[in-house]
Length: 239
Figure 1 (cartoon, rainbow, N blue to C red):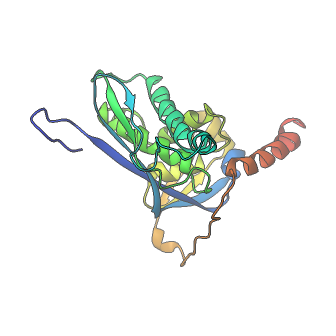
Figure 2 (figure 1 turned 120 degrees about the vertical axis):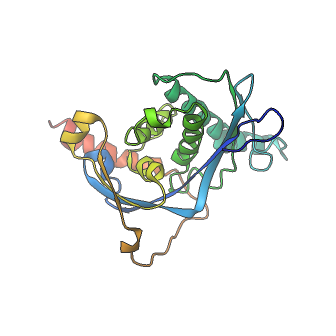
Figure 3 (figure 1 turned 60 degrees about the vertical axis):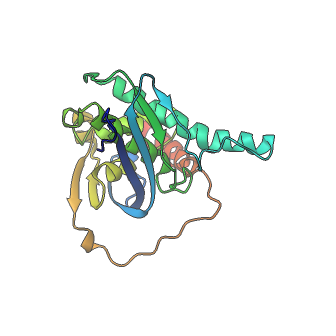
């Protein structure tokens, strides 16, 4: 939190980092167990400050407003800025549904540089929502009212509004942030409380690792759709 000027404008800024699904991915959707961690090489950031209106500002470099052609404009709007815009709206929507006090009339929302690409397979969409949600929690001073175990569910709900196919694993790693997290999504516990059993582990337990990612990635969510279809056919439809 920072203040500046005579009016002491409060500025909230948060980062959410890329997630590595180390073991068990994608069994978080199928009541399994996973181990994940975050890395500092890639991130999404969000800024929030008081305003008379809720205004989402484009980033001056990453959210372009000048384009060389109509094709380029269409691609950028739908694949980048519009995607970030909708995720920010989703972040506001899920918090609005919570019974928390509204202590200020409005805020200016500025998505930070989406350094973490939404289709790298490193949890870009959840990082955007996670960073935005952290800003909102601190801005309205309600972080202590929303349990840390519940926050990944809020992030996932915001993404589901856009039709994103995902589970809780990525959001848990980003909310708990900065270390190695073991997650137990046993059906009994999930049915009872709505979230898993999350345990922070010593990051030094990991061996040296190398990260390899595609230069021109595809939508990682489409891969999940295949697993989901097979799971439903095998375990849900067959009873």
